Amino acid sequence: MKLYYSPGACSLSPHIVAEEAGLALDLVKIDMKTKQTEHGEDFLAINPKGYVPTLQLDNGEVLTEGPAIVQYLADLKPESALAPANGSFPRYRLQEALGYINSELHKTYSPLFSSDTPPEVRKDREDYLLKRYGYIEQVLAKQLYLLGDQFTAADAYLFTVTNWAHLVKLDLSSLPNLLAFQKRVGERPAVQAAMRAEKLIK
Image (cartoon, rainbow, N blue to C red; front, side, top):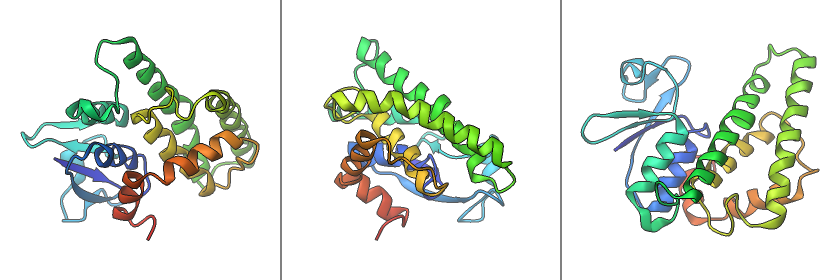
């Protein structure tokens, strides 16, 4: 399988899940400005959406969208417990968490990365993020991870997205449980392996 990625982008989430599950991936780096792979291929010919993560299976099938990819990878190794069994109520809890991160956190960060974003819009998005993180702060006050005491694909996604806070200078100091979560997840061997492979840490 090939994972098309950009270092530190949301593609880090499936990269972490694959490491946690012990799945081998061929990593292909994308230049998000030129839409070229590191091998000079036209990325748009692989994924017309033009963004990562993109997973190409050995049979040629291409899967896009992080929440779908992390569930697919987790299901390849059910014993990893990265996703509860399909059809079970805990699986819907996983999808609930992935959906929340995707719609309420991930997309809210986007304007904060642009230097063209007006200050008032930036402030609005920062306030919105802190409000949405407030819910997660309450969840993490009661348990180690989003679904309980078991690390899942949702935690890989939350860690990846929250890692962007320092890039956009979002102050998370009012969220000690979230910060403890980031430290806890960041110390996991699989997470460190994925981040080293993307040259995010040494």
